[in-house]
Image 1 (tube, one colour):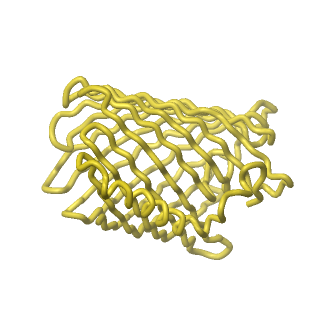
Image 2 (cartoon, rainbow, N blue to C red; image 1 turned 90 degrees about the horizontal axis):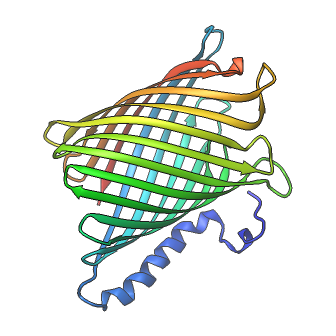
Image 3 (cartoon, one colour; image 1 turned 45 degrees about the vertical axis):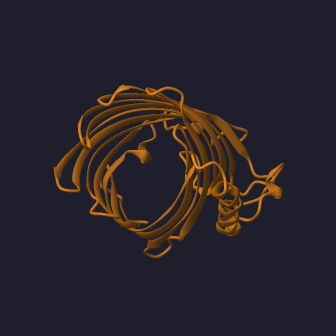
Length: 311
């Protein structure tokens, strides 16, 4: 993608792994000799995922199949004291799309975060994140910066409340010269009820928007979801969930001459088997997609299987 403003000072995305490794070393050297109250926790993860999906228009005139195989690598370093946790993390995803006429894609992400326990029941987190080649609501290819702050209140081990605010700054690979940009906030709220070990009921709300100098990129979106996680055997959990998503685009016109409005209802069920350091996850999702633009009316399934190893 083209880089404008501050973007040219950034190294190309292909060097993000070298930057991260260097940063981890720079941080680790002084802290390894620092106050013994600090502890270093390096970690990593590798993962292979396969996806099979099919989408059908409501009149069944068009059926679209999609299969893909992806590989993900992640390295991280945590630096912890009794009440404070600092983490630097970098990962890369390579997606190989199966079938003719479908291009492979990749994504890089670099994250730095700081968490601090203000009291025994109240935690604050701040985070900065950089994406290269991110797929977003409004674009199939964007570079992005995100900054966020999150508050967590956990009065006891059975109840947890979270509120987070994020600012997104995006640059789109849409062929414009210079490339167009977008920016806007996202607010997330969650309540989680704990019934026992790995046994939860969670309610999530989200509101977000992007404003852009490219009218086709701006949008507003609200979503609400509920998920229930229950252990069914040793290291095995089941997680049914459902989410409702409503989106309004600023500059996309529907068949009736009004702004395009989409609505998605997404029930899903997920199995998580984590024996030791292995992470094996299977997900079945069905998407009901309605819109005031008739060509967008469709529904279909998405099946995902991932196998990872954390070290």
